[in-house]
Every structure is written in C-alpha cells, then in structure tokens.
Image (cartoon, rainbow, N blue to C red):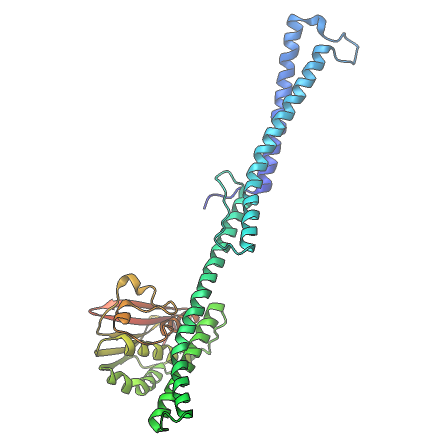
Length: 354
C-alpha cells in the first residue's frame, strides 16, 4: 500500500505554496519592473506625492494580477482533479453497483490524494466482497437444492409406493426411510453449523473433559459401518482432560469418520488424539488413495470433493469437512489436510491442554 498523505494536509500545503509563490513572484517582479523603469523610462512613472499609478504601473498591476489568477487557477485545477477524479470514479461505480453490476470497480492513479485513494481501495474491497458473496449465494442455493433433492426424492418415492400399495410395509423398508430422514437431519445440522460459523454466531460450551472417552464412544457407534467398508480403525489417543466443547468435537470426529467411510480405500484407519505443549490435535489418517495437493486446501470449503472421491462416485453432502473447519475455527484453531505415506491425514488442531 502506498503511503497515505492526508487530504487536509495536502490542501493546506498546496494553498500555502500557492500564496508563497504569488507573493514571491509579485515582489521579485515589482523590483525588476521598477528597476527597469527607473533605468530606462523614469518619466513614465507617477510623480512623487501622487497616489494614482501611471499607465505602465497600471499595466504591471493588471499583468501581475492576471498572472496570479492564472497560477491560482492552474494549481486549483490540478488539486481538484487529484481529489475529484477518484471520488467521481467511486460515485459512478456506486451507481453501477446499485443497478446490479457487482463487477464495477473504481480507479485512482498514483497522484490521488490520501483519503480519496483509500476511499477507492475500500470501495473496491467492498465491491469484491459483494460480488463474491453473490456468487457464493448462487452456488450455495444450487448445491443445497442438489443435496436435498436425493433424500427427498427417495422419501417421496417410497412413501408414494407405500400409499399406492406398490411396496409392502416391512421393517427393512421403514429402516431405509428412517435412514433417509437421518441423512436429512445431518444435512440440516451441518448447514446450520456452517451458517452459524460464517456469521460468527457458532457458540461453544468449552469445558475440561475426557475427550478420549468421547472418541471411544464415537468409534463404538461408527465402527460397524467402517468395517463394512473394509476400514480397520485403530485408536491412538492420549488420556486426560482437554479444554474443548465435547459435543462439537464429537460432531467433528463423526464428520471425519464419515468422510473416511465415503472416500478412503479399504485398509487401516488411525484415529488419534494428542495434547502437547498447550496444543491439542484430533486426527483421522487413512491408508489411501491420497489427495492431490493442488486441491487439498479447498477440501474444507463447503460442497467440495476431491477428484478421487468423484472418480469413486463418493457419497456425502460435501459439508462434513466444512463443519470440521468451522468447529476448529470456533475453538481458535484450524483444520488441516496433508499426505501421510500413500494416505491422507485430516486433523483438527486447537489450543488447549490435557
């Protein structure tokens, strides 16, 4: 960012220099004028004791006044252009934004003054955020509609089939319907968490808790589904008390395990908890197939899936890792993804102690 020169300071400096220049020019010019007149045409000067200037003196007064006015007009034009050009650009861009053109941007040159230049920069930042938010809103609306369509379509088809007698009521069918309702419930909760995090209203109930015990409970709940996918979970957790919101941490772990169930290749799956030097680390590491480093940084964005997941026809809402990041950031930490051997490690890191 270029250095800021205050607008008021520039105006005062310009006016001061203008007045000083006019005074110096008139003073020096007067000395030169009277020197020439006394040397070459003393008879054309006003006689001593008279207060009315002579013709040449009137000419000098008019000429010096016009020169001062031209100099003042030139300085004022240059100064006003440096001030008004960026303001005019901002005003025009504001009208375009108000008419729906969020790609409008104001411009300023290197000679724009202090606050005017900052105004242009701030307006452009605001316009970029508005444009990004508008694009994200369109994307979110389309993504949410897409994610809701599948379970709603399945529920509608099954229920309509039951109503028309196409399907025979059975425990298996009702469990299928219940599973779809649970999927809808998880999707709605994930949307709620990500929405609260984006608005800065995701609240936590932080306490010193036995997080290792909570991890074991979550694994006991999900292990049958993991093993059904060929994943063999292994626990490597530090016992002790950790400062966190236990419910949110269980939610994050469920999202990480669901992500592994949907996208990881069959093999070992390590669930780890480590607390060292005031930092806690909850991780899930799989044995493959790995993540392209080029997309690893985007996996925690909502509705993002890796190429491997798409190739495998991976399921999932695309919100799980976004929930993990939201919970990590609410704890003052971060969510990470990096390669470990031929597999991938997803981890949630936050400040805390055991």
